[in-house]
Length: 301
View: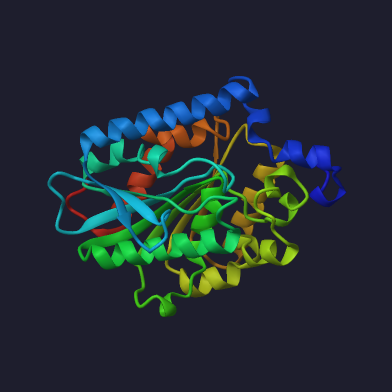
């Protein structure tokens, strides 16, 4: 594939338009179906878990999380924190509780994070917010045995930025044992000249500062013990697939514990939607990661 620097704007925008690459349905249909699927899964999650809605992690109106907890939590509670996608300008925690469906009945808590999407929020603010959300959650729940991050698309970029955090300024060091990064963007430079950046208004400096691919040394410093899965859909665009593979290679060459998952027969949307299903490959992979993570006897995988 031609390098992104050689691409004309229309081709670059096509590469960063995931709906154009779905093998299942037309572009408009796949986006509508995606929101409907996530919403349906989240509504189901609210029937299988104890729920705490709009728990604040900061003073901002958008700085809230929803918490899904087992009815009888184990004494050592694994916690999955989900950071939604939507190109930093769509979706919210209201559609982001779906992972609780297979996880909560197994003794795992799930937290769905809100952050100020563009144009209200800029990239630096969003990164700051997700970092503060993790610190706040860990401070509020003393019995957490381990934290596992999961982010999709833009949320994978934000989750990867959490892994690069110097926690000394937060008065807490979260015990992040694992991270699931699904169909993410790890180099923000190519999107500066696309429609994606219209509400974000990132400069080159903003993009570099918030590109996980530029910060692998920081991740190695602050999250060296974390097990990382970089996953990408078979029918993601070539640029999304390239970024995922290159980010995986950078992590691996730095000696980090990382694996790459090329998920067959999926596109950018159902690769994450199917985490509502206990039998889905990535769900099983996540459950195995949590089981390895921590001697949590309350988990049944």
